[in-house]
Image (tube, rainbow, N blue to C red):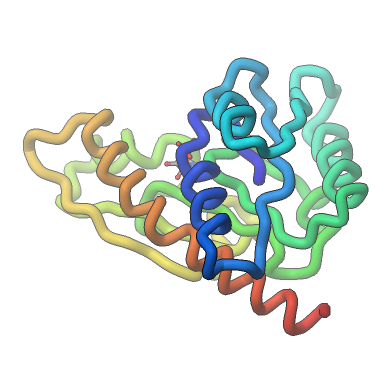
Length: 191
Ligand code: GAR
């Protein structure tokens, strides 16, 4: 998994994979790009190996993505989940894996509110409903095939914090089963 922030989706997926009846996938590595991020602390607590690949140490997005790709390949990883990875990723990473092997969770009902400020944008737009989407990553940002969505109603009382909390709740429900379904599919097709 790749994460930049708090890592609550990372923790939800780790716990889901650890349930006794879910044997098909393991979260084997967390890559973070921010040294002090919450995701790293969660990985330490959960006993999941993590590695910092800080984009600030690279001259371009492509070089950063190449370093990430090398690490993933070295670990024989075949399914990559972007869970709050707040970087636009390039063909260096996307084309290194078979189609459909990179998934992203996004805090809106795509195609609405693409980009890095989806929750603020939904509040600004004054819509009464937003949500979250799990989708395959393609070269165009937030535009790949949608695999699952959940709706969240916005009330007049909502601010960024409360809406973000409601969206996170739904994300933790929809992301893990989709990742597991994808892992099963990959296992059947690639052995
Ligand atoms: C999640 O809400 C995810 O949808 C969002 O970052 C949050 C990470 O939360 N991703 C994006 O905005 C990507 N454009 P978490 O660190 O607690 O999992």
